[in-house]
Length: 377
Image 1: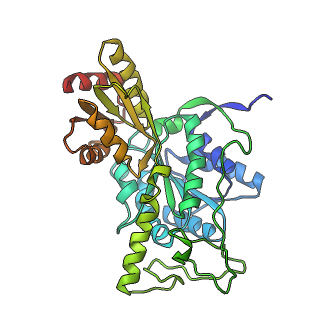
Image 2: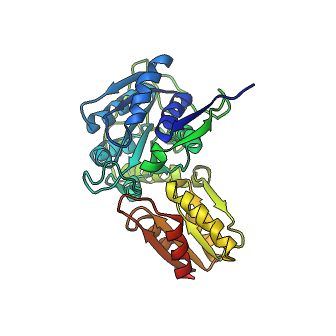
Image 3: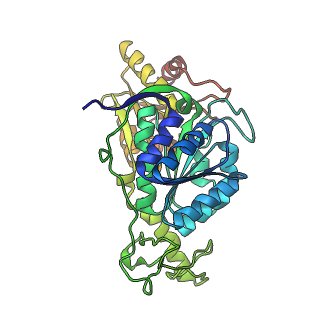
């Protein structure tokens, strides 16, 4: 059977993947460079019985997907830097209330309005620490249109599995470039459905840890009725200030990701086994890095590429292992230093470390990476 193929943008691949994953509700507000995601879903969601709504602003869009998720829907929102800044309070609400949702951030230059049509990778730390308080975070950074499709589906699966918001970080270039993709057949990619309660509505508690660190989540609007709050709460969902309950809740919400980090993390390694220098990069920069690695190999420099596809949780164990076997790590990223500080924390001086940043609205070229590698060695 002939597989369906298409030449499409990364944003378009993301939207089609959301439908494939079972998304039935999108709320958003147009913002460059993510608007094509909303445009495609406005057309595609009604075909599968889903709903699309353009909200009055970014804050309302985040609130809308939280409400739809609590009603049992798989949900998505898409935005960029300024919009993500506005969403942070409600992302924190989704964290503490453990509400599954997928948020796409097509990164652009900043701060503030910055460079709306220019690429950037400057929201790495925002994806981890943008909202206040101690909380877990999952963020994925695909590097091709085909990978955008697969990783968008995985983002929905992670959100439903771990009952939390999941962010997809795409830079403007990945989002707007066009590549051939092969659409997976129905059932080819695994689709996760959230765990429904095992108990009757009368016995149900939305944060009952007797079922484990990830309590089942009932859909509102049916027989199950329960309380949801942004406050620390007891297993029944109602607020509490009891120190032992607050402490247990905070630690459980971190633990549900940390304990499953090996299942959540995903990396690509290219020619790392004998590498004397590792280029660690993500998104579009990793494609320049791969070209640079091949060029350096031709010159006799044993270079390798380590690409974290899951940025959060950061793959610290594997990065530490790689660092112990190499002389140097170079971290190119379209910002003035974000992911490199995670690498520095993990490497702990076991090899040389150098950052390569660019924030002028242009991508990092392979030749800039080659020059930095030679400088470090």
